[in-house]
Length: 102
Image 1 (tube, helix red, strand yellow):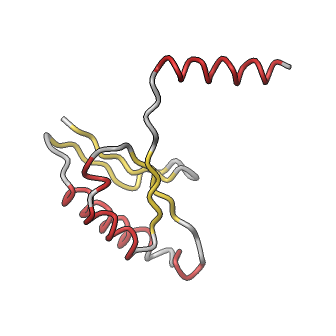
Image 2 (cartoon, rainbow, N blue to C red):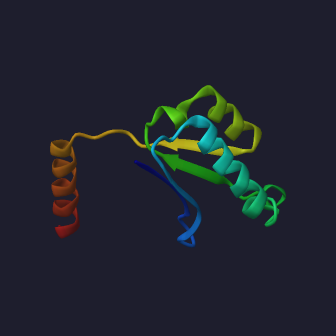
Image 3 (cartoon, rainbow, N blue to C red):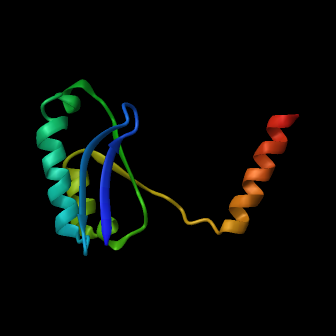
């Protein structure tokens, strides 16, 4: 099963969520169409110059040509997380902690 959750990271408000046995491009696009209609357009964010950044994992449904074109048409910037091996993550965390302790 898959869970698609769209959260406003500024307010921590859940804009959309859905559960399914599949998570296809059309489902992601439909979710964003609802978010744009229900939240972004009503707040008139485009006219106000608010920059919307979408962060997602590297699933193919997020990187498809359809979604990339849809985001571009709707002035949404897509940012994909870079996969980091757990060992490298532990090394980065240890390095950050040692810098903070100085």
